[in-house]
Each structure stands twice: as C-alpha cells, then as structure tokens.
Length: 63
Image (cartoon, rainbow, N blue to C red):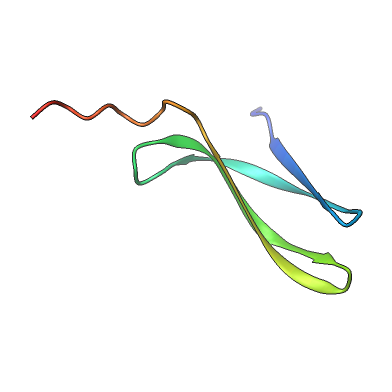
C-alpha cells in the first residue's frame, strides 16, 4: 500500500487538507502537486500547491 501525502492549508482559521500526487513537470523537474477549492469566510478560493524537488531538473548537456 502506498503512503498518502497530504498538505494542510489554514487561512483565517479554516483548515483543509489536500492530497499531493507525484508529478513529473514539463521542465524535467519532479515533485508533488495538488489543487482544489475551499470556503473561507463564505467565499470560495481556488488552491494550487506545487512542491518541486530542488535539484531534480536534469542538467543541460554542453553544446
């Protein structure tokens, strides 16, 4: 069974957890990504979370 990765956002006292999925970005970097919506003070907000592994982007080959 794989481990579930969660990120919890707290804004103005409202908390919500988002599931982070593994992601290989177009740039070649890798990490995790989550998105969703949450209600804060009666207003809807779109949440986007990126966690990029530092140094994961492949080095450019010399020309």
